[in-house]
Image (cartoon, rainbow, N blue to C red; front, side, top):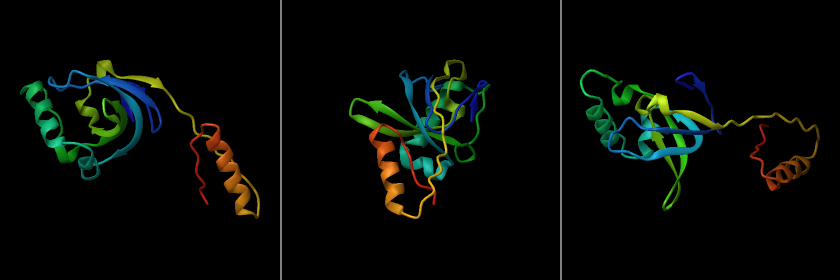
Length: 136
């Protein structure tokens, strides 16, 4: 995905402010996914938030209808712990958007006839702070 010329993807850490005048916090967290409205609606009161964004923009600055926009899911730290929240890129003040940390994905191929060997390799990576999964 791209906001204001800044490309980012899943597992990247981003920082931005919202175009919602009632939301004055600085958002910072890890992007954990991209989705449509149906999935995103499980991650917050999107209707109320959308209405606040639209009201703050006024009639001269239009954004897509709620069901016609894409969303990103971001894992953020709150006072009550980490939560995943959905936000439409259209609701982000693009001038404040920045990529804090970019992740890199590596593909490792383990050739073996023993599934325990693959499990051992994955566990070794996890024990050292890596996120990994088996694709087979």
